[in-house]
Image (cartoon, rainbow, N blue to C red; front, side, top):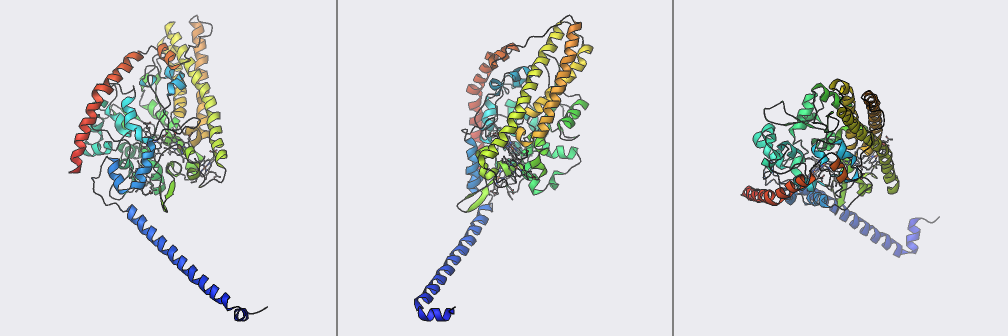
Length: 497
Ligand code: HEC
Ligand code: HEC
Ligand code: HEC
Ligand code: HEC
């Protein structure tokens, strides 16, 4: 072995080469270090809010001037092109998809119109267009605006929640105009996550909990739980007000919530066919998520629906809230090593299996309502029907609680399987009682299943005057809505002075 000195003596060029290579390497390292420092500085700059607007600034574009990356990704919620097997951002008419729902909701506004949710960008447009809000005066209270807009915390800060909820939905039309956005989830001074909705704070208080003690990771789900939850309107709290309440006093499972509603003898409506006292499940996404494996492993809504992305070396939170199946690499593969196709297959297989049985429950519920109606028509008495109607209420609650949240089959498949099978058992129980009752009333054969093969046929079957509802909406959109827009534009101009 020759020593290095000997080699260099023989070939001095080699010494120079090593010297130059070292100089280049040191230079490159210097560049890298300087770039890191610079990007850090950029990041600090990007996150330091120079607040030039008020605490409850409802216009997302104003926040966007300070936080262009988050704002631009938020704007992508306007994209309606992605469709997965059961979800996505395209507008899907759920009643057309499953006309059985029309019968399940007979006597309730949902039987007129129900679409699968789109991006946050459309929250205002979609509530204005749905037949459920009708025309002027609207059949709905202002409470319906609660989960649609950062104008809501702005107005609540002026009057308190009860006064905000007071009155029919159309009376705040010119005030609530900006779709879900920054002020719904962020404190304008610190940009920390904030809870802007009193209903969630009050729901924690009702359980003896303090939401201000929530951890940062919990907040990454709780900001969503301001809206993606089960709720009802309580008419007994403030005179003339339908007050927004999350029914969590006994806990957040379907049974806890059902017990709460039973205790206060609450029903959303009386079913038009069966006359059962019904409860409508809204979208208990958060409650069902809590029962799943990801929640128990501490994975938050934002981890899957708002993953980090990187642009020009800066890492930030993707505000394009959407189906994670459109973004498996950032949403899932941070934690899971499986291939994209395999992860999608996992999601679809859970959805397929649950929806198979949920459809069976749905069909059984149609039968329950129609058979109960037949019993009434044949002269059944209140006492004879009482137990049966309670069963129908319970069975449909289990169906709705598992159907209303569109991600639930993935968020918590085992819990959903439990609820759906429980619902099937109760619905069958009701039908056994109905068969016995119908026989004593002289009807000892099958009650025929209605022809509800399309939405139109189902709506006709339950006696809806769809022409009238569609005409009312058309008049509203053509004559009332433009005035709201004009009024709002004028009002918002004054914010900039
Ligand atoms: C202020 C209320 C509100 C908050 C807060 C909120 N959402 Fe939503 N979200 C909605 C409404 C309303 C819709 C339906 C919009 C429509 O269809 O017009 C929706 C739709 C969605 C969709 C469907 C989008 C699509 O393109 O299919 C997803 C996913 C979603 N939200 C996830 C979340 C997550 C995750 C959070 C928390 C990080 C959250 N949301 C916070 C009200 C809210
Ligand atoms: C549905 C709730 C929600 C809405 C609406 C929302 N954000 Fe966020 N935002 C989050 C979450 C969750 C994070 C991650 C925060 C964390 O973990 O500390 C975040 C983080 C941020 C951050 C910190 C830097 C980063 O990217 O992680 C900024 C800045 C920000 N958002 C700006 C905005 C702006 C601007 C808007 C309106 C266009 C907006 N956000 C709307 C939930 C929301
Ligand atoms: C922050 C980490 C994290 C993210 C993000 C994440 N997961 Fe998971 N996932 C977990 C953990 C932890 C478990 C539990 C497995 C365990 O503890 O061994 C799990 C379990 C699962 C399971 C099996 C449990 C069940 O319910 O059957 C599936 C399937 C799954 N994940 C799919 C996904 C998909 C699809 C996504 C993206 C939409 C995703 N995960 C995102 C951490 C994560
Ligand atoms: C482990 C990842 C993960 C977590 C955590 C998670 N989700 Fe989801 N979410 C999904 C997947 C996967 C789907 C199914 C998407 C599909 O079928 O296209 C979904 C679907 C949804 C949908 C319907 C989306 C659509 O396109 O219509 C909503 C709304 C939703 N989730 C809200 C939430 C909320 C709110 C939370 C927290 C309470 C949450 N999710 C937690 C992965 C997750």
